[in-house]
Image 1 (cartoon, rainbow, N blue to C red):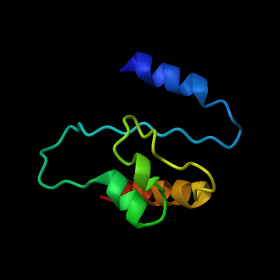
Image 2: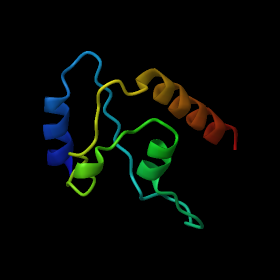
Image 3: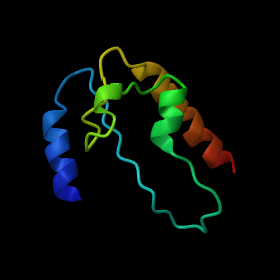
Image 4: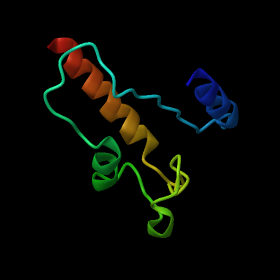
Length: 85
């Protein structure tokens, strides 16, 4: 996994590039789930080219014009809410 993240980071050298690494593994019991990509898409944070929807490794994602600042704000709010618990 470290190799995959490292190679991905090497390709994300653009000034406007935001790389997020998320894990589906945690340290607590798991009682419910979320399809994060579906939620991001349904809420306008991720756009997928329908003709490439089944491509591997997010190759079908249309990265142009994404709402990066809004997504950063959302992640900050989620992090703050988690800290309050």
